[in-house]
Length: 340
Image 1: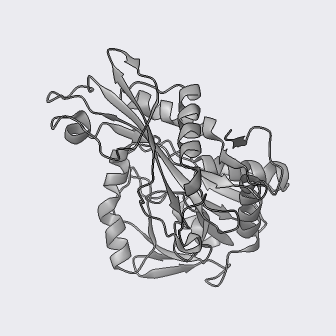
Image 2 (image 1 turned 90 degrees about the horizontal axis):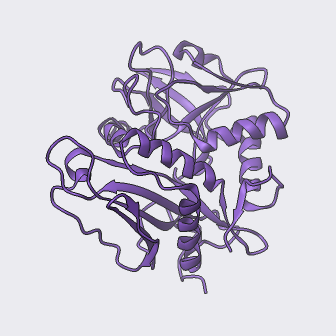
């Protein structure tokens, strides 16, 4: 039986649910996955995650379809990205089969927390690995924990598909040849200060430029950019320090192979931004959120699609991808994973 929540007004915040899934890595091997009720984490005060930020994570969602099925979207892609992230921070990899099984276990155990179809809510799932073994020398932890938690959420941006206003940041999210292309906690810590500054100034997010030359668009604190040219071409920025968003890659596939649009994944000079007809940010949490204005140190770049609603191309992309995720539109084979 579904929990007694205001499903239409969940917001995007942590909410403790009944169960979480845990495995521990000791003596060179992962333990079996366990479902537990304790939301607390117990570890050494000298754990590597506390001393040297040795942690990586993922984000995906579980949905309830119109016919009542519980599904997740492309969890195999999240599994692969977590392995890539773990490899970069010298952490043990969680194999794809183990990852998908853990996500399925979490969703099944917490089925009553999955928002009903049609409310706009989802069960946001956060798998993560962290070094919980003690180390004071700068070396990888001797022990690790893999944990999968979840929480019912609404839209990431409180106004949903209402266009947002963002600003160009003077700070960098990630360094060239650094860790920007993996989902490491330390990348997001770097965006906290400029992110809070942006909000205090009345903006929804930051636009980060490349740290080497500060002439190319990279991403926001937690999402990739997506642009639409005046002739309807979808353009997404390309850089070795941009996180390879699963949502962005899925949208590009949908645009090219389902909607018949032209797509380009390439470096995007900042000076080109004013020439686009539509702009948005995309990621698991938001799916897509349109951008209405970009503030460049007091100079406003007004996106032609405006501040009232998403442009027609971004709206079509959003409707198609969410339709696939919710099961109302048939998508590519294997994209929607049913939790049984």
